Length: 312
Image (cartoon, rainbow, N blue to C red; front, side, top):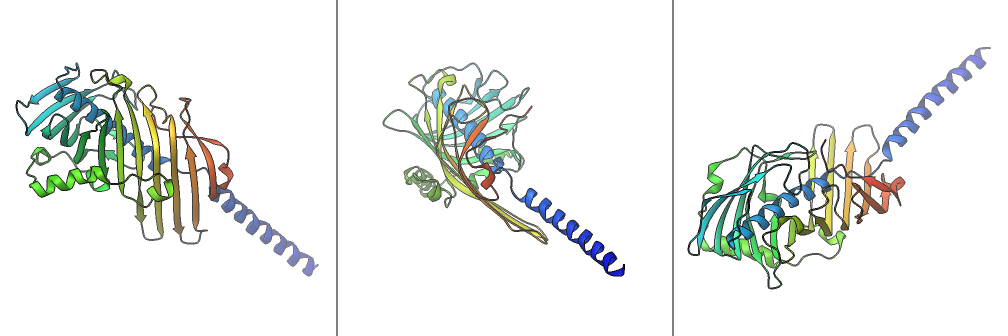
């Protein structure tokens, strides 16, 4: 009887252990985290829209949602303009968003500039931060009429607004260094892009600078986010190649590839490792297709997952 009692206790304990292990395994396998990708897409969207607007204004187009605070008569010059944002503007990720984007630019000519963007009473809401401003990004109109933009993680500012950001006191060497970023070779492979901390946006105005609704943006680049606490460490790497945004669809990009990779270690838990390659499709359904997934993401192979780019 005693042996039977011990056997029952051991069996019950084994069931509990296996149950906990199965629960941990079930929690381990999950869909790829897309928050960092959508954060980069939203940031690129607001940069692309603001740059396209500013370039059109500098070419003499009058846009109903733009007020010019300081204009340019001769080049080089500094110009400041205010862009109104509301539900009638392209890429409104949340209903009821209103505010202004202040664009301050150091313009070498009407086709070349270094811009700073400040968001006032309006934030791009993301899962990890509220975007406040973007500091000194180089912009140039290329020979084929498209607009090139380059920025890096150091250009994304999460601090409160500061009038100091509107003051351009750049030395000639600093200006040349900014424009040199536009000449960097853009990666053609997500595994190469993920090692960078640089992003490139190509803006196609479709030969209609006065119509912002038909613009498209193509994003290429990569970077990583790292978070360390007392008992956890997490690194998320992300990359995009030829990810295309159309003004008519704020729910998802309509083309291109993205990579997300996670390394997460936490005390008393399995190390979380996962890599996924996503493909964006033409349907504006808020989803992306998982082309390949390994590790913690392996169960998502061949499925479509939701991006959650729009906030209700």
